[in-house]
Length: 82
Image (cartoon, rainbow, N blue to C red; front, side, top):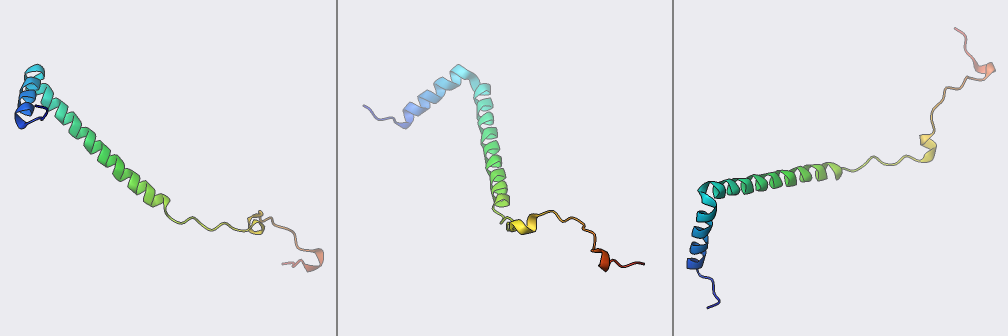
């Protein structure tokens, strides 16, 4: 007593088949398979996103280089005509 043998599992399986019928059990197993496939696809998508995020970022430029460049007129004495 206390141990679960293969015969116990067979009896449990027969009772489940009688209660739910073959159609519902096969539908349930199909749904489980779809869930596993979706989970694997999601894990693969996460790996692709992780690989893309792992790329090194561009180096940060010093503040002097980040100032906007504005066109300044040349001094009056240095203007070229023509």
